Every structure is written in structure tokens, then in C-alpha cells.
Length: 341
Image 1 (cartoon, rainbow, N blue to C red):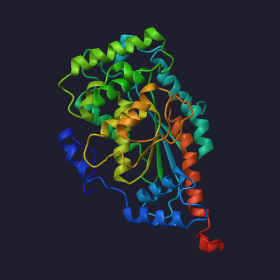
Image 2: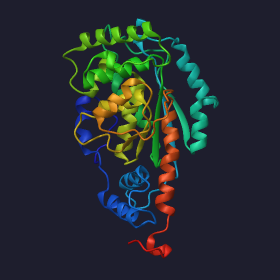
Image 3: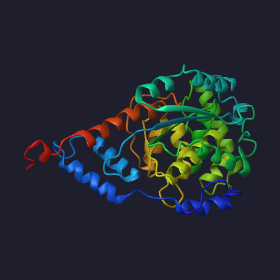
Image 4: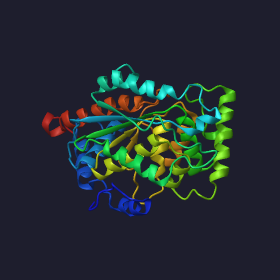
């Protein structure tokens, strides 16, 4: 890539830069696959652990990839669509939970400590929610570009892997709206309970999304247009971080439904902009499995989780570390003096 993604003064400036993002190192991937074939185990016996090792080799450009620095980032934002009663908790909880992350008291803090990831929290104008998408666009072009740039700026360029998560009261409604606008189907297919909405709350979500789809029909050309119509600042920041990681060829672990729906806004652009991303888990939110089918990406774990915060990504990091320990530490048949045939 010859030109930095950000700053960009317009989406028209940003779009052509996406074409310059690098792809995987196929030679490193081939070498890693050959190493896997020579290790003291039946071919394929470690299943997706073998695939993960080759995946990491391709993006690190090294036959023996390693994780020295794992970075976890949680983006937090608030949403105007909460005016439609889609949230069982007040928006003040977003800032309160962000403070809990900083204080070390949330699930993500414990999971990052267990898996060896450094956690940071990026609060995105929590005192200024996005626009109510049932009444107008959620974000202006300038606001979208700012959130994308802030997401990109959060990346540690020395990280070996990036874990992404989010926090934002109302953002399961935003995620369902983004997914519906991008992949079609009825809003009811994508909507779930989020933080615990009852039947009436779920119906309010559906009604709000349908109103938003009707209002923004004809304005939805691609993922950036969808983010302006429906998105939160944290969803846009996730996209910015994914793009910045791609520019540095840093692999990404996406969290559950909300995080994956945000990243999915990049799926329609040329260059397979999610090729460096692994979906950590199949969230219990019903839209996640549908989303994974549309993206053609299998989830790494299925633990019935639906917390958000990057919690599934932190658990998946432990699996990724295990994959690399096996890949790098196992003896080959020749080294062990074991017949491979």
C-alpha cells in the first residue's frame, strides 16, 4: 500500500485507497502448510488449529508465526434510535461500563488477563448519541470519517493480533439494522434480545428497523452508506480498526454479532477486506448464525455467549495461542525419528 488510509477528507478519497491494501503472503502460508504436514500427527488431526496456524503464517509472512503482543480494543458509543424504546437499560450504562472496563471489573478484563491481551477502551462521544435512524441518518459523512479514523488510530502497529469488541446501549438494534440493510431478509430474522429485551422490546426493535429501512431506501449503496444511515460510532470505529489492521497485515479476531455486523459493512468492497479476520464465536444472538452464512465465515467457538465487550475474541485468543504452540513446538517426523509413512 502506497498511500495511508487516513486522514481522508471524503469517502470519495477513501474508497480508492482500499484497493491498495495488502493480501496474505502465500509463500509463508505454503511453507506453514508443509510444516503441518511434517509434524508428528496424522494429517488434519488438529483440525482448525492447523488452519489457524497457516492463517497466521500468511498474515505475518512467517512460516512460524508468533503472538508476542495481543491487543484488545473495546469501542463505546451511544445511539439515537434509543429514543424508540429499543433498549431495556438507559444509555448512561455505556459510560458506566466503560469506566468498569478501565477499572478492571468487567468480564473482558478477566478474559484478557487469562489469554494475555492488553486491553484499551475508546469512548466515542458518549455525550452525543448518533442520530435516530428512524428520523434521519445516524451519521454524517464527516462523522463517519472521524469514527473510522479514530478506530484506525487505536491500532498498535506492533501488535501481532488485534481483538475487537464494543459497548453501547442500543447497539444490537443498530447491528440488526446494518445486517438487514446489507444482506436483506426481514428485520425479524436479524433481531434478538440483546441485553435482555422482552417480547414487546423485540417488537419495538423490529418496528424501528423497518421504519429506518423505509426512510433510507434508495440511499444504501454499500457498507459506508449503511453506516451513515444506521451505524453507531463504535461500529464505524470497528471498521476503521479492521482496515488499519489490514494495512499492517495484522490478523483480527472479531467478537460476536454486533462486532461482526459492523465489520460486515466492508464485505462488499473489492479485495476481500475481511480475509484477515476470524469470527471468534457464534453468538447466541440469532442474527449471528445468519450473518456467518452470508459472510461464508465459520465461527471458531460456540459457547452460547452474547455478552459483547470482545469477550468471545478474548476466549478465542487462547485457542489461537494453542494453535501456534502446537505448530511451532511439535517435532517433525524426521526430528523425532518417527516413520511418517
